[in-house]
Figure 1: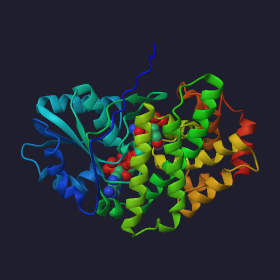
Figure 2 (figure 1 turned 90 degrees about the vertical axis):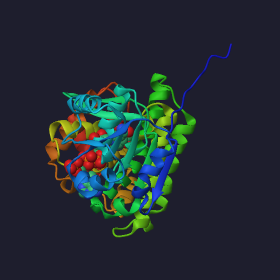
Figure 3 (figure 1 turned 90 degrees about the horizontal axis):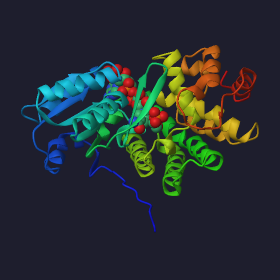
Figure 4 (figure 1 turned 180 degrees about the horizontal axis):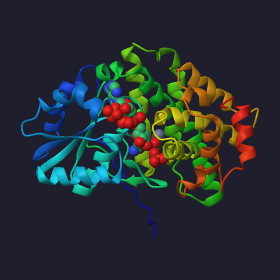
Length: 348
Ligand SMILES: NC(=O)C1=CN([C@@H]2O[C@H](COP(=O)(O)OP(=O)(O)OC[C@H]3O[C@@H](n4cnc5c(N)ncnc54)[C@H](OP(=O)(O)O)[C@@H]3O)[C@@H](O)[C@H]2O)C=CC1
Ligand SMILES: O=C(CO)COP(=O)(O)O
Ligand SMILES: [Zn+2]
């Protein structure tokens, strides 16, 4: 008997373009939701676009969060219940979007993703990435019912947020290699479609590098399209595997030992240079990753991340402890090997 089955959850509406934030309530109407919305945001996005969202909905309540944590998820769940909200709107970068995604899962209601930065590929994905103590959970949750990505707003965000989004996509190269490796060595389930989509997304972004420049709304358009595509790959896979390998474990470990030092996307980009070195050696493709990051203005060294060499080595040697996800790091790389990789690739 044929006994395979899969359930791929994707957003129903994806609006992307100049000024589409003003179409948010129209996009919500189209979803036939009931009840009032509850807005989950964080300080800068709230200041920049909170009123443009609130002005479109009667009876909306909002909360502004300083950080992503399980406690923040609980705060949102409690406040949304108290407001008797029918659905959530997440406005901001990765943190409010991840918290709202998980809270909507707990509340059994839908949520709409309204990114204010093209900084990460969680804007569409069905995963929530939440730190807790010594670990970071990649929690399954439903993807947004709709995504409203206003390229005018995204283009006005600090340029480094966009280069972080580029680096999050470039890291797909090594994430897919780690996934294939885990499939071969540990029989981890692998999706050819999700792997190919994730890799193609990185290739297309690198192919568009010449059009990715500060001050060009076109850049926000290109990067957001790639982030949507990468998020869809995660939804097809039903895991963050297509977009998160050893370079993400390294970044999550940096978040633990040097919190707030650099943006998620920038950390995974630098991680990707070193983990590509582990995959393919001194004459391997790590130079392609480094050059692509550098062309887009993303950091390629510890100095550019604002993180000291010792912390980079500590994160690289302990990254495998973050979660049970087999990657090129195996059961851990030695300090000597980490120093060699970081030195040869010019990260330290
Ligand atoms: N679920 C998934 O599949 C994925 C999840 N992630 C997660 O997302 C997070 C990274 O996302 P990231 O966006 O970097 O994190 P943040 O949400 O912390 O945003 C980064 C910074 O940008 C600020 N900001 C956001 N928008 C604007 C704007 N328009 N103008 C000025 N400042 C702005 C934020 O302000 P403020 O401090 O006020 O919020 C914050 O200081 C990580 O936690 C990562 O794990 C990443 C990829 C995939
Ligand atoms: O950041 C991600 C993909 O870009 C996903 O994060 P996780 O590694 O926590 O699943
Ligand atoms: Zn990421």
